[in-house]
View 1 (spheres, one colour):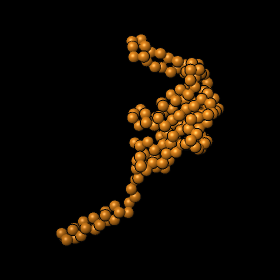
View 2: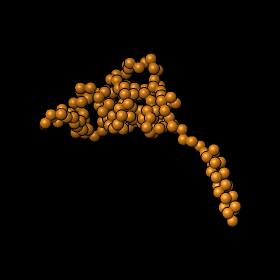
View 3: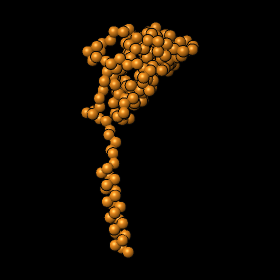
View 4: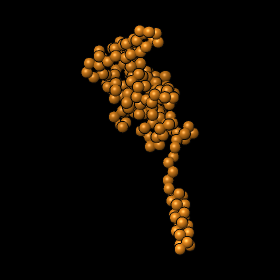
Length: 169
């Protein structure tokens, strides 16, 4: 009886060792194994929120099969023609951006039109930054974004690949 029990334990251990050797391991990306590319996105006639969400996906790396949540495995993104974005409805006048000076009564607000008049690139940057994680990783990912007013950008040497946002999930 006891030998039968010991034989069953031996068989179970053998099966477990076979399963361990045959199972597939999840590959986690790190700085050495990630493959970052440069991507160029044209913001002309794009809606701000839809553009920002797709750019955030590219920055985060969620479009890649080897996505790892805690690693910067996304691409470097250059957004051109930031002055040609669109907002739907009455967002140009109704949408407000709040900030605080740090002093009592120091809350300041700008409408989308006022922020766009100051710097159209900041409108795109703020919307993309709001869609990234609110931690050190999000700050690191945000550094991979470059938003430019106009079609000329300072990253010609990196030869960014032009991407169609309709192809990004």
